[in-house]
Every structure is written in C-alpha cells, then in structure tokens.
Image 1 (cartoon, rainbow, N blue to C red):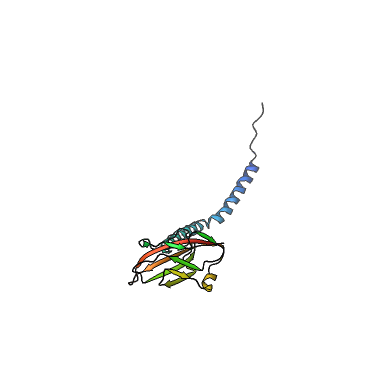
Image 2: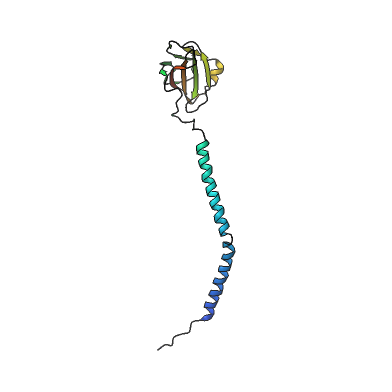
Length: 168
C-alpha cells in the first residue's frame, strides 16, 4: 500500500506569495476605483441632462420632406403651372387661380424638404414671371415646392396653394 504523500508546501507557499503580490497590485488599482465610479456616474448623469435640455430647447426639425409649406386653415388655391412636371430648364412662369378680395400674393419656391425659399416675391396678379437671376437660383437636379399665399387687406391669409416640379 502506498504511503500518502505530504503536500509540497513550497509550491503552495509560492502560490500564496504570488496571490498576495497580485492582491497588492490590485489594491493600487482599486484605490482609484471609487473615484472612477463616481466620475463615470457624473459623466452619465451630465450626458442625460444635456440630452434632455437639447431635446426640450431645440426647435423642431425643418428639413423633413413632409413639412408643410402653406397654412392648413387657408382656402385652397388651384395652381396651374408648373405642376408635377419634370423640366429641362427652370420655369420662367408660375400661374394660379385668382382669389377674390386679395390684396397681394406671396410666391415662394423651395428646394423640397428645406425651409428657406430660393425665390420669394410679392405680386398683385395671379401669375409671376421670373427674372433671369431668379431662374439661376433654381439649379438642375432638384425637386422643388412652390407656394402661393393670397393675403387680404389686413395681411391675413385668405387662400393658399402649392405644387411641385423637378428640374432635370
């Protein structure tokens, strides 16, 4: 029968010494642990607060392709040209139905999905002839929305219409 062997204390002692060295090394790291945890917490909270402030304080986006260009409460104006066409050149003329009781019409041309008009003009007749300078502001390769708003003598909107066109 074999005699049980005594455990080799040298290797256990070495392992314990090594473990003790590792623990001491980790203690140096963990000394910063609470500070790092608090710093991370502060940064996360600051990020959340900044996101909430940004969402509340930011204006709504105005670059949506589905944005409204005319007041919804206005009576519709039938627009006739250009309307839903693809053109080789920027249009020279815009036309729409006349509105009784209007003082003036405000005509605007936008690149679809933007909020700043590339052309804006006030006229008193139910059509608009663009100048060469205005036509130059309507580049090829874009889809445009154009609007006409009829304003009464008090400046209130009494009618509005819109149509799209594309310049190839």
